[in-house]
Image (tube, rainbow, N blue to C red; front, side, top):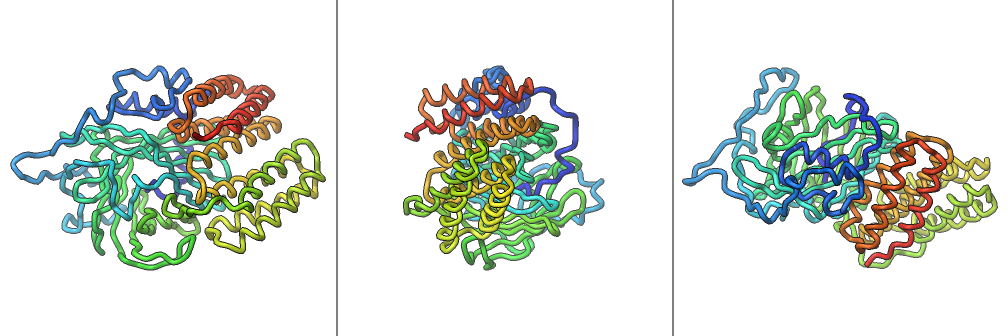
Length: 495
């Protein structure tokens, strides 16, 4: 689960715009190859058809199991992590060394088996976070990928987990990161870096925030094994570039969560380079539970498998998704009577679902989207109706995560974004089309390992072909290719 906190509009505007179209997997491959570290990347697993991904040098690919961890020191001595110079950081009151619990070099014998309950990244298949940033809706999807990577640090070859973080602001792609985590032998969890892609208007504008342990700076503790009040540690420790210092304020707390009260919560203060102090809460089995800076908030909505249910998907949840897609298609065809009937069915289904257990952050999203859909249908506004129907269908898939596999839901999300890409292309919103393509490609990272070879080959081929009109800003051809992709993904059967 990601630990970066709320994204800022400033970070998405640093640096120069990256020219041309680069797919999600290709972009990840380019960063990996630049790092010069041994890796098993999502690009290799997905057999990406993109030119940039296939150009990654073979020397960067290796099996994670081929490089076991080694102890950093011999003779029973404890090594200390060399600390970067913080002399220029006069806007942060740093904790004294006697509060720090992250000064010793840890050992990593079984680093991808994360048992720390407050940062359970190896057990969490899919996490949804919702909130508000600068008055706009915030959404983040965090997914553990099946691949691992080897990072060399302090004389050790550490196998690290790869967690994909995708953030949206105002419903559009804002940031994507591949975060690297490992658990030390003492139960603490360490952050080994991230590959970051910041977006604006559907394009990568920079990779600010990218760092790798052993290259830019040290690995950093992201969660102690047994945090106590007053403990201090640095989840990022590269002054002048990426830096955060945490002080534990309370442990074993109780607070309301998205599905009711939760116990054993950890409350921290996170101090940033710019002097901002961010409050965060972590929960056992969930990880990051709540983040807040003034009016900007980010709350956990769902974590799977923690919130998974054994019951099959309720019919009303299936209706909520399927009839939202029917409304989407009816609006596109100006079939307003059919759209109105779909809205009636959606309203009835939501009344039943809402009477049960719905995560608190999701409820108002569906209610508002249904209201917007009704207004758009009354006004026969096809673009507004399709965007509102998208919101309903997206939340329906979120709720289905409690009953269905992450693979099934992410395939449904791919279909949804392909449909949105058609709508954006028909509206000639070319920046949005480019962003939609990125989103779909990032979903490919998540689903590739679960697909049959023939399905993956077809998906890769169509994405490569779709990338051409998107890159050439050909709206009509982009709409045609996105519709074909939608139909292809709808036809994939999960094995």
